[in-house]
Image (cartoon, rainbow, N blue to C red; front, side, top):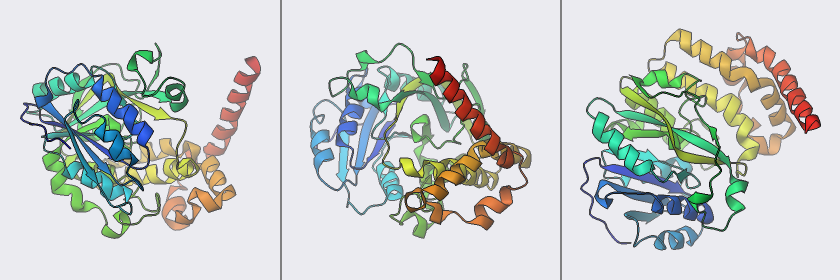
Length: 347
C-alpha cells in the first residue's frame, strides 16, 4: 500500500490489530475517514492482520488513497497477543492509540488527541480518553459502511467522571474511572518508547498460546505491558469521549464470565506487583468480585466453552475467600435479576 510521509509534531500512530472482522474494520476505517483532520502529517494508521483470509486486506485497499495507511498481513496462526505487539511494532509515532477493529472514532477525535499530545506530552506518558458505548446492532441497522451522522443523540459513557485532570498513572485504576482496569485498549494512548522497553514482560509460552484467554498474558497483554511500563508515570484523564466501543456480538461471549471474574482480578494483581498500594489492591479486588458467584456458576454450566478448564481453585478462588463480595455476589446476582424482571414487567 501507499507509503505516506509522516513527520507531524504529535507523531500519533493509530494501531489496529484485526482478525476476521472485515466489515467491522471497514466501519472503523470509515469513521477515521470521516474525521475532520487538519493535516495527514500528524498521524498514521497501522493495521496488523492475522485473519484467515484476505478480505481485510481488500477492505484496507479501499482506503489507501484517502488515509495514511500502513498494512501488514500476518500468518493466520499469529496469536492475538502477538498481533497486538506486531501492530505497535509497525508504528513510527511517539504516541500510540491502539483500537479494536470494531471500534469507531468520533469525527473530532484525531485532532483532539493530537492537540492533547502537543499540549501535555512534556510531562504525560499516558492518556486515558473516555469512550461511548453502543450496541453493534444499532450500527448494523444502517447502510454500511456506517455514516457517523447517524449516531444516536444520547449514548452511554464508559467513565462517569465529567472533568479532565492530570494524575499518577496508577490512580487510573479507580473503578469510577476504569472498572476494567485499562482492559479496553481503545481508551489508552501511550508513549511508544516505554511500551517497547517493557514489551518483553509477557510470558513467551502464554503469548504464543493460540487458545483464547487461556492465560492472562494472551487475554490482556497490553495491560501487563502498561503496568510494567507506566506505573511511575504521570497520566492524563480526558473526560470527553472520543471513541465508540461496540458491544452485543462477540465471538468470545461464552468466555465473558472468565474475563470478568478471573482475568480482571489478575489485572489487579499485576498492578499490585508494579506499585499499587495494598489498600487499593484489596478494595479493587472486593469491588470486582461482585459478579463472582454468577460467573462461576455460568462457567460450570457451560464448561465446554466457558474456559472453566483455565480456572484454578488455589490460584483464582481460594485467595479471594477473605473478601465479602465473593459471598455477597450471590445475592447481588439475584437482585440484578429482580431489577431486570421488574423493569421488563413495567414496560
